[in-house]
Length: 387
Length: 211
Image (cartoon, rainbow over all chains, first blue to last red; front, side, top):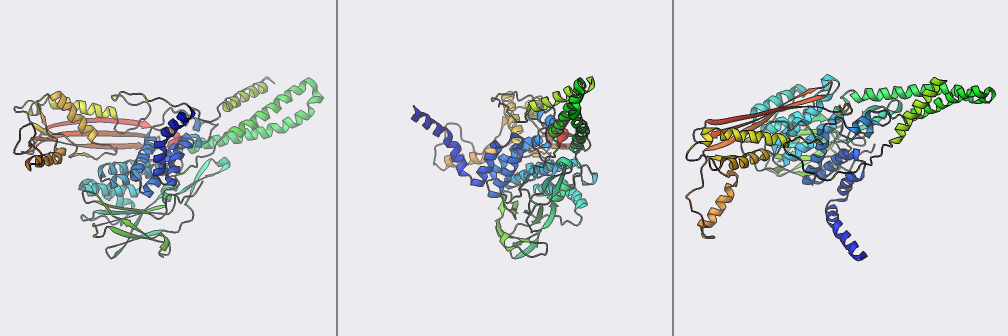
């Protein structure tokens, strides 16, 4: 009987085991983390696994993961118990289901659109880029709202290759207001080159009790520019977007005032506790001398103890979970379809010196309608900073 | 004394209520259930195109087309192509357009009962390959009649999905107006013989922790 049970168990788990071993170990681990980690980190783990899958060339899996993550991101959290809990005094902001800050949500749509472009579906790619741009519309500071130039460019490029000249020119005009002097694609351009450099912006907790969210650039990278070599020509890519700047320029968040209020409550109870505990200590010492009247001071001691306990239970820390395999910058270039089906990408530091260990050869992918995409990253999606 | 004792009791109760919920998610799952495609899901909601929108737009367009005498009242029955080839998505909602055109074509064919003839133009490659096998002698001629050519179409569906988004950055209220337009084009004369429009607007506001 035991033999039959073990055999049944083996057959039940075999399909899962086979699919798990079919993926490289880092990707398998990333996918497993989605279910093994806390449920409120699901979208974060999906985004990171999806980016890793894309980097490793597993585009179908990447698309499924990004779709799942975007389902979570676009879900409206109204009357949600999780959201209410994260707003309360007794839970950190990190108790909420992760959806990402606006720059992270925008980048989720960027990657989904990239996958659509690889599949030759430029209409859905355009829809993704438009949706991503909307995510950037929540900046507190008006001058930084909906200024994600990368997504504007990609939406315009999608319209350009679809032959929708009116839509393309409208969006390119808007792009020029944010990137004056940007070289717009010519009618003959059919190849888009996109290269990512650097590492993800990091979120840190600051302020009393860690209630303020601050951003810092990723660590340990020095590439700042990108160069392309194809058909005997050398071309510099345009650094169209800084993801760190998008992250750090958003300004305050409405949740910040809630966290500030929680900190004030915490400080108030701390002050109450400090004020009362001094009296309580004195009262405890004097209680035996006062007999029945000492009961009053015992009550004071109880309040001090309770207030201290309340202070320690208030959780006002900002949510510093971040999508750790995003890039620091994205660089783009469009050109007519080259004769070669492979290009060389070089990465330069701030002094313009090539960093040889990052140089890579990348294939040009062309769809049935003759539209091409080249996409590359300086850093592997496993080369990340930890919180 | 009463005031201090009351404060102590209230504080203790507040603490106990916090301590009672440990923050550990111990929720059970939920078995798979079938849901009505005509209603919005209570679980996952957004402001994009959902199942109830696809069902509503195709039902309305189907009824409208059947009521049009140029399309459904001609003799002989007109030949129409209904697919997503010329149905473009210019909106900010990602969607598989085939969901709309497939449902429209199939429901229309069921309801038309011979008043329209539907041409599967997206399968013309498959049809040509089989005709070549028959005519080259690799296979026999089959059991239905041989024809000199495949069916030519009289009318073809074109359409567009567009959207206009608005965001109130202070309240994070987001609204999306979506418009789905359909037209049938005379493939000989180039005129528009029928047009239909379906529009809807959705508004949502995410919890403040996500703004």
